[in-house]
Amino acid sequence: MRIFITGICGFVGSWLAQAIKDTPKTQVFGIDNLFRPGSEINRGILLSKGIGVFHGDVRLWADLENLPPSDWVIDAAANPSVLAGIDGLSTSRQLVENNLIGTLNVLEYCKRHKAGFILLSTSRVYSLASLAVLPIRIAGNSFALDLAKPLPPGLSEAGIGEDFSVAAPVSLYGSTKLASEIMALEYGATFGFPVWVNRCGVLAGAGQFATADQGIFSYWMHAHAARRPLRYIGFGGFGYQVRDALHPADLAQLLMLQMVAAPTGGDRVYNAGGGAKNSMSLAQLTAVCNDIFGDHVPIADCGDRPFDLPWIVMNSGKIRHQFGWEPTRTITSILHEIAQHVRDHPGWLDLCATSANER
Image 1 (cartoon, rainbow, N blue to C red):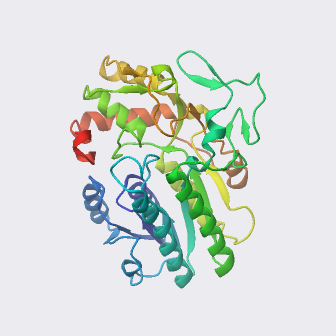
Image 2: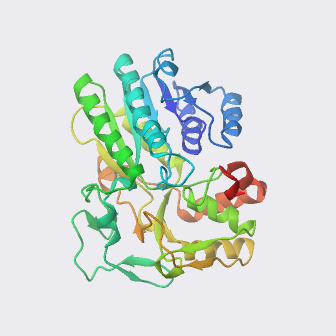
Image 3: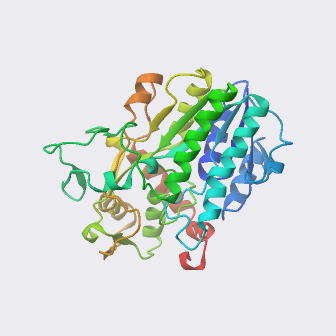
């Protein structure tokens, strides 16, 4: 089986490539524009392991049309920041070209080669308005669902389900991913190739080129150890906001299951996250960092930031029922893996910086 990964030199793409390559009778290659600082590091690692890397841009059909055929495509190429298009680092048009036009070109590749398609989507397709008013309470140094109050459709103690509202607004970033989901499902149904859509929670692990608005677990630990300024933004400045964490090695296991089970009909959209047992607040993450690296106190910043939300935890119950899959790496093991990477790479954040403001 030949597997083609877009964004192969990114954190997720490179992890997936290395994990999937170890599967018997499997060949892996991919494409990357090498735009993200640090991606050349992963390119060298992949090439050393016999994984083919083409330098190209999914926004340009000419960069895809002469690539070799594959049996499956994993679309991991995207601008993954919820602030993309408004952060001054990218324009709204660049965001749409990266995340939607790029996916359209990849789908044309799948159409040409009859390749199956797996889209890595995001929890950010869910409605901002609905997520902002979740019934929450303070439990220790963390937000938690207030189960004494009525829960909206699609929400349970296990987290946000696939039937939670996707009504606009969802952010510019979320809208590009939601539109990509719809386009992928339509292409698969129209041209007869299998499609899976996985709405991922926060992906975390060693080697992530993290910034403050993405890859928060890795960024926080590296910044804490380097004694860089950290801020608890919004929600009273206490750091109670919660996210769940999923390791890309667990995601790779799920994708292999999906590529084996490849019908073209039926349910196509699933949540894939760490879930409630692998979730943590920023304040709790700081406590872990204090234990490992010594005390470092974040600054309370009560100002609001666009698209910040108090609690996002993914309910992956449907995918567990369908595929028998669930994460095997706990959030504790993920954080200890990142901590070891911090020790081994003390200047890592300088490799990841995308602007002078991050240095």
